[in-house]
Length: 165
Image (cartoon, rainbow, N blue to C red; front, side, top):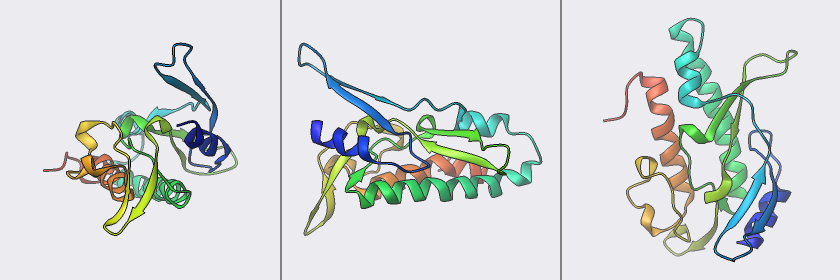
């Protein structure tokens, strides 16, 4: 776990909250990490409070989805899976005044796991994630496909105006 957090603390991407520090509890029974503070709202709260025309929401969400996919691509290329993609771990904030649109940041890399490649595809160690956003085959380990499945479940209500199903 120490190696994973060391790699994550060196990792920088504009759409990922940077991990700053990592440590073990004195009793050895757990670990902690610190990351950048991100002001803004989680994805569902942002959608609920978004001003403007309702028909603009899907266009804006598609832009945010592009930012999220770019962040996940960088995480995956570095050999990790996020491990807990859900609305609460996607923060939205206004960009600087000289830029237009919204900025997305993925937060909570506490469920991140190293991806290993086997003959059956990319797999990793099993991690705890939010059950409602888990891929059906998630008990096989942290994988790229699970992050993408969870991102799809996360943005579907914003684009379709209803939950999946």
